[in-house]
Amino acid sequence: MTGTTIIQGEFVSAGLQTTLSLPMGVDWIELWNVTAINANTASKGKYYYAQFINGALIGTGFEVQTNAGANATNLIAAPASSFALVNTATATAGAPVAITAISNATPPLVSTGSTTGLASNNGVVEIINTTGAQQFGGMTFSIGTVVANTSFTLKYAPTIVAGTNGFYRIIPYDPIFYPRNRFITAITTGATTDIKMSVDSTFTVGQLVRIIVPAAYGSISQNINGLTAVITAINATTNVATVNLNSTGMGTFVFPLTAAVPFTQAQLVPVGSGAPDAGETSYSLLDATENRAISGVTLAAGGVNAPAGEVADVICWRAGASLITSGSTTLGAFVV
Image (cartoon, rainbow, N blue to C red; front, side, top):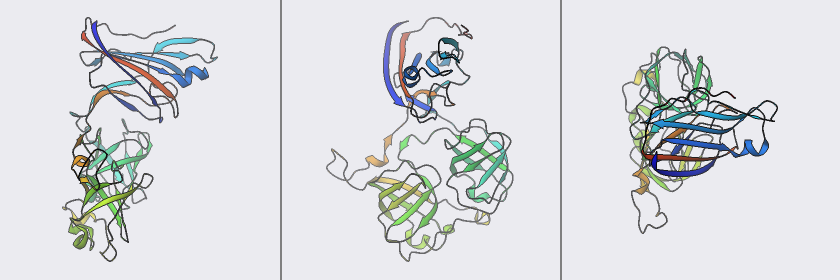
């Protein structure tokens, strides 16, 4: 290899899969779990390396792991799916996966024979063509608790009459422009207005949004539909955005029944800045037009032997892209 471009960085693990943005491309990546190294933690991965040629991962990469006695290290094959190349600008939704029921619990529980690719409190799914819960059709929801190959919950979905057969598919990335439209699942009226969304919010305080509430959502639609307001608070636990709109007496938000299909979903739509950002001299559309697409590498979560580490682990990393790549040797398993 010649003419290598190197980029490096550090992050503190949240215990979840982590995507590193590598706009120059990547032919190899290596990571050090500084927390595991300093603590000399037994049976825990300390160092990882993976190589890509022509956009393909060569083998699984390898891992340096402390042995059970924490008095030596072993060089072994990294766990399957430890690394994956990503490009969120060209991502497509996953294939439909069959479901057998959507419950009337709070939050709704989706029964399915396959949860491959799902992780608790991480990721987004789209519900498709359900029987008896058609009001969820075409909507996206953040994932709550996952029971492997049995069920998962729709974290912020409203309680509905139970449904039966249908499909879900994984939505791997948000649309590339930030912030994104979000489906609305509940509105609480008052001196200010609280708006709950079906997918984890990417909105921030100060953004100007338009509230879209079609007639299928009850009497509030006659008064609130099309209005704009500024976000004054975000509750990350309940996924509620509070806006500076006095909605007292505007009516009641009612999530539609399956019989209301077809209808247009209620949405919270970014339209710009509610106040000038740093360096701006006037209101602008920057808060509705920022391109957040990235290319890079996703590091798997999964505990002590995952490159993304455990909660609070400090991970240092370095990645490179080469002008010339020669050879196509596959890394096999490493045993020391």
